[in-house]
Length: 106
Image (cartoon, rainbow, N blue to C red):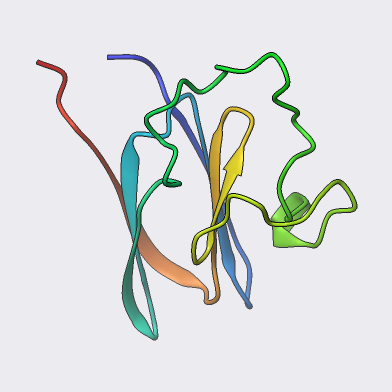
């Protein structure tokens, strides 16, 4: 299996989780408001670095989920924003726990 990297930042207002190295995972986030399942962007079956025109400045969220001047939220589906190397999840609450699931390679 290829290596993936998960980076999570939890604040008093939200949780931001960056997944790099793949788009073929699902993330389950638990917080005071309940549990939410985040699926990868709809184009997850495309290679992570498939286009020579992919820019690291795409997406609508900057560091810690703040708005970024480098683009809108194209490719976003309910809290999930596609990035050049994977995707970013912005959960609207402080996470108490999260799990990452990916398919077994046969």
